Structures are given as structure tokens and as C-alpha cells.
Amino acid sequence: MGSRKHISAEKRKEERKSLYVARLRNVPTSPRKMRIVADLVRGMNVESAMSVLEHSPKEASGRLYKLLRSAIANWEVKNEGERVEDNQLFIKEISVDSARMLKRIQPAPQGRAHRIRKRSNHVTLILGNRVQKVEEVEEVITENTDK
Image (cartoon, rainbow, N blue to C red; front, side):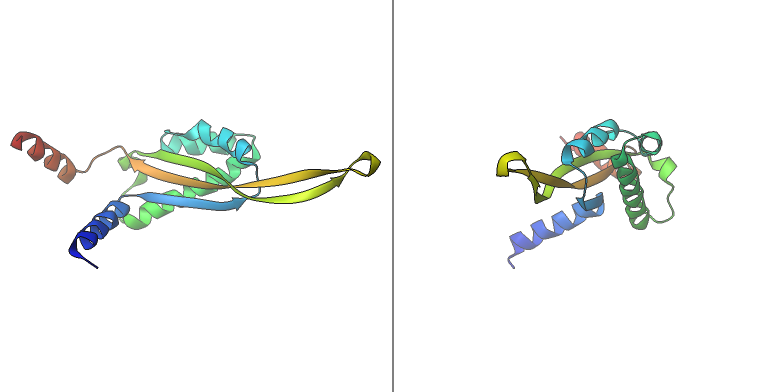
């Protein structure tokens, strides 16, 4: 691998250390129904999003609640010894994509058949941190003063 590719690979690796991602694959719920619940919590703080998902009557909210808990656990693994409450975590990005579709046949009158599509989806949740670390703030200040 050349030095340019090596440097860019190292840069991507460093950026991934600050991302806290959880993915849910092949959920047997239609993407349309899952997007309704995802739109409820997009951009919210983790604590308020957890309470919204806990008390929502939709079936998809239970699955998103577990996914959010998984993302928080991933954050805790990368940040040992820190508390979630002190860091002001929020849902930076949540996306719902279509997954495989099971196709079935429903008998219809006069020898016809209707196709039934049983949809499923993939959900990707990325957490962000609203509190910048002291080192990052100092870097931004030094960059601005150098200009």
C-alpha cells in the first residue's frame, strides 16, 4: 500500500474511533412503519429518546429502544470510566433502509392471484456527543489564532 493510501486509511480509522454505531438488520417490519418511529427520536438526547421509545405504543419502538441501548453500550466500551449523563449523547443520525422482501401469493377470485410483499428493513443508529473534549477545543482555538 502506498503512503497516500496508508495515511488516508489511518485517518479513516481515527474518525471511526469517535463514531458510536449500532445496526439492526432484517427487521420484519415495513420500512415505512419503522421510519415513523425513527423520525420521533432523530436528533434527541439519549435519555429523552429512551423515554419516548419506552412509552410509545408502536411495535417498532421496542426494537429501536433495544438498538439505542446497544449503541450506548458501544459508546461505553470505547469510553471506559465516563458517564453517559455527563457527555450529553444524542442521536446524531438514524436511517431506515429497505431490506429483503418476501414475496407470497394470495389466491384471488376467478383463478387470479395477488402478490403479497412482506417487507423488512435495516436500521443504522449513530450517536454523537454534544460536549467537546478540552483537547479538541484547544486545537480549534490554536487553529483560529494561527490564521
